Image (cartoon, rainbow, N blue to C red; front, side):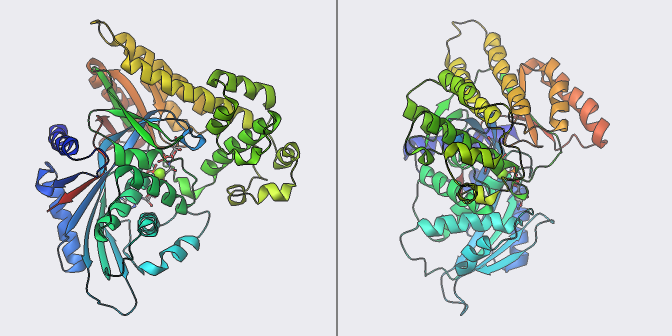
Length: 497
Ligand code: ADP
Ligand code: NG1
Ligand code: MG
């Protein structure tokens, strides 16, 4: 299937170069090789539900982040690439009035565990605002995030679409840190764009989707939506967010192989407050350092990167400021409020703070901020090594340097950021003898690891994983859909029949 994928990649790269780098690529559905059986199955599902055939198709990939974890929401650059697993959305619209209750959206999903859903488009905002808190959101809510994001950013009134019928088929393992959620949100947003004949480029869509996925409750930093739209086959990208979204293609060393292994410990990010607590900790750290450095409007500085720019110092110096101003013992909200010269209630009612139960968790500002500055440095190091000239020599020293950065990233995520999981750490330890480097990828608390290794070691590594992790913990055949060798794939694509 890798060669089919490559063929599609080559086609769309050509189209892209010919048109406009920010244009969302459109490809004939027939160019999507190796997917015929899947498409046919989805079309059949669509026909059974809606007694018609879809007229447009959208494909959005998941991603693996190679390095730069939990720093996008602090404004720092990250290093992801798209994977071949994707979400496919098929749709059809009705532009003649067919109901008196305004525009209707009907959703169905090929996956058995995802129930059908139907609502009026006008109700989407209130459905999202009134969703139940503290539980795993229903799949359709992610879809609605994408729809709302696109609609509220379109300038023309979309009164001529009366009915949108949608069928989803997702192949990104859910709750595994490969961003199935953003693939779904972005696919929904792009399907809406196509349905309403809007025109946005890749970056606009990435920004819209980064914002709209927050309707699900998590204060994400935008990495997933950025790579979902901006990915280019054959390269990873350094994605920057400040001063504005930008992606820089980076070619990975030729003999580098990245293997993704799913720990099978699921982490549903929107079901708990773990993620938002980390965002809040990083924000509080920024406020405190800003205040102590004498910045008068310190509450306006919510990102550690903005703080760094304001202070005009290096990442190394930022790390020193962490040691200077933030103690290692966990903070309470009360102490943070005192340092900032605020009322506790006032602090608790700040945006984001109000969403989480800050009073109940120990806030480890020192550890989180230290991770962020060091991880941000590792991202630039990683890029530098990828781009360094090996002078005709082999790449193996490059791989070992990259690997060391990945290992350091994992240690920091485990010990300073505390977002690993015993299952992830077990996989990491098993992987070490076979790999140059290995780390958790995505938000963590479960999900996947990504390992960097020489092509020649892949077979032995996979065999070890199968025996010593999958068969041992989950029985025969659990290995099948849990491990994949991956290559940088393309971003969101519109497929035309
Ligand atoms: P991740 O993004 O790491 O995969 P999240 O917890 O952010 O994990 O999002 C997972 C959620 O996204 C799922 O619980 C589900 O609601 C939704 N989702 C993922 N894949 C699909 C799919 N194929 N169909 C419907 N919903 C999906
Ligand atoms: P996943 O693993 O997809 O939940 C999350 C965030 C990213 C980023 C990473 C950690 C969303 C949609 N995604 O990813 O922005 O912060 O964690 O690096 O919130
Ligand atoms: Mg997610």
